[in-house]
Length: 428
Image (cartoon, rainbow, N blue to C red):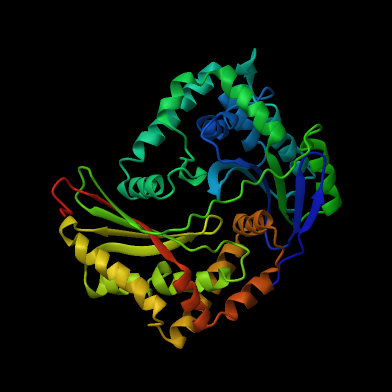
């Protein structure tokens, strides 16, 4: 699989990544702001993308702001916050039609860069803060989002697993913020945090599509430079706890279906030599419909509505999710633990290893076929300090042996078993 060479340039206050590609009919611009995960300011950080996407000083009303995007042939803007190890990353994504496909010669790309600049660097302000109406409205929206997590029992169970498993580690912090912080956030305090983020966060800007590299470089120089910001790497090194004994937590809510989630420590992160073995391990264990968890917990014993696993690349965690009837807790837990033992004992075939490697490779190719997916893969590499062409990534997955998968399984330690059940379920 061939991907155009990524050009990385250190700029005035940001790092520019240019990916020329004739594959896409649009041009994608992505800005990623990274800071260490901290309890202080985390709710402001969760709130900011929503506020920034509502108005700018140049387009101060909702109507004029939306019209600015519509005038650029429906250019789209989106954002989200995520945890990458012990770091908090806010991503802003803009997708612009490629002007070469248009009949007229409108400078669409430059106008898009200018609009992106306004969103990030010139948001609507009133006196010494953001617009109070926008802040209040977005606070209410975020508060609803936080409270709604409890209604989504799968997400809530995963949140509680992290609360217990990573207690005292930055990774336990809630990336969407905390309800109790809302009252103290004012338009002025949020604007102060915004200025700190804009000036101090590590900023990476990605541009991918069919464009002239020199033109893109000139545009980013004009619209993304942050004079005075050193853009020094603020990476917070991930905590890796040595597990002596696992813990078992049972919590009760009004639920019909119990949520049985298990957290393991893999001691392997993106960029490590055995990371590729972890990808194959996860595929056989619980990553695909052909996996041990799916086939044994769900299909063979009909104990779970779903059973799957995934790993956290920058934190070194493996997480198992299953939805079970509260009365089946002990049996389901035993069968899940048995699947991990089977992996450690090499109870899988060479054929399964080969099939899973192909599934992992196909998944990777699918991800990289999408512009934003490709940017995520490259950003993972940037955070890990490794530079690996797509072909090399695939080659490393193909090289994984059954023995390496077993060695990976032997490294993995159970940290926490978490069960969210009904008031009568899961009795000990």
